[in-house]
Amino acid sequence: MTSELHTFIHLLFIGVVALFPVVNPIGTAFVVMPYFARLDRGGKKRAVGTITLYAFCVCTVTLIAGQWILKLFGLSIPVVQLAGGIMICKMGWEFLSSDDKDASADSSSDVGDAKPRNIDNQLFYPLTFPLTTGAGTISVLLTLSAHGADTDLRQMLFNMGAIMLAIVVMCVLVYVFFLNTQRIERYLGSQGERIFNRLIAFFIFCVGLQIAVTGAKALFS
Image (tube, rainbow, N blue to C red):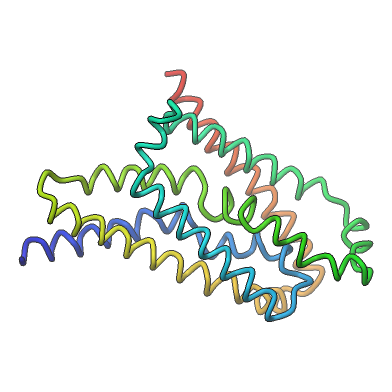
């Protein structure tokens, strides 16, 4: 029992440490901030709750059936990295090339009323996948799943439980940071927010490019 508990704690620690940089709840909170700009507190709480639920489902399905799904479609992790990286690059480019005049034009009452419906269509893609849980998260979870595999069913259940708890910890952090983006926005101010969003957009593009290059290298090596 002591050995199982030690393995549980060890895997939980490894899971949190491995997932934190790829999920990046703090950095991603800045990225999703523009999407929540015109939502009231209730709408934002509902949207963040849905994103968190989607993120949990993506992580859980990946952990339990990820290897099987990849085999079913004949996919490899490098292919997932390449595709996910391209998707992230596309989002970063759209943020960089967006016109502030277009954003200000959206402040009319009609668009304001339609915003909750628009963001509902964006809660899974792109806000949950690939922004919150992308190719990096899937790769890490597949690796953790393989690491936690064991011939002893009881030990394997302990291991999967530890990784699941690490996923729950990440989802809680995502919920907390995403919900408090308005406080961050207040500290930055409108001009600071605009500058920061452009910088973040550039970094999103670079991160996507890095993931795509890593996948391409592994694919063609």
